[in-house]
Amino acid sequence: MELLEDSRLTAMGLLTEAYTSLNTLCAEQLAAHGLAPVEFEVLLRLARSPARRLRMTDLSRQTSMSTSGVTRMIDRLEREALVCRVPCDIDRRSSYAALTSKGLARLQETIPGHLELLDEWLVGPLTQRQLQGLLVGLRVVRDAVRPEATAGVHDQ
Image (cartoon, rainbow, N blue to C red):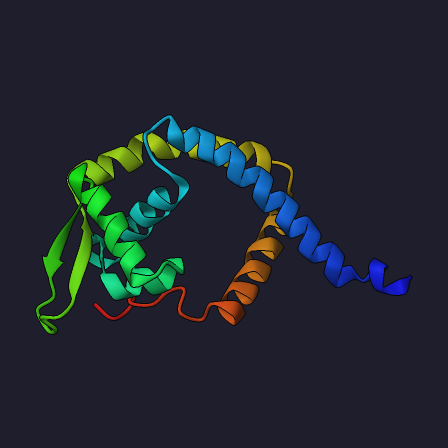
């Protein structure tokens, strides 16, 4: 049946297989540093944001977590002193999640091993041209399905 051979199904299947396998490898490495993948993502997003902070609502939109999910996540990270809440000057109903020096230190100890995994399993098998094509393609798809993925990055 021709439908079963559709390249769109193949693309989605390959993306799912690659993501699932990479995520499993990364989760094991992150756990060795006391982080779940979503916690690492939150810390990394904060570290890469202006002033190393994001409004909680923007963090919710960037991560596709509910606002209550982000609140619980920030509560956990705050208990470990990896992030702190900072009041928003222009909207008292809102607050920022900000990366602490301890959170930055945790990232700095975690990232080298994470990059080794990515070098071995994601970047290493690709040529520079393939990697650049992958990055362009993934951004196009990400921006189409999650236009809010960079919410708040340029608003501060």
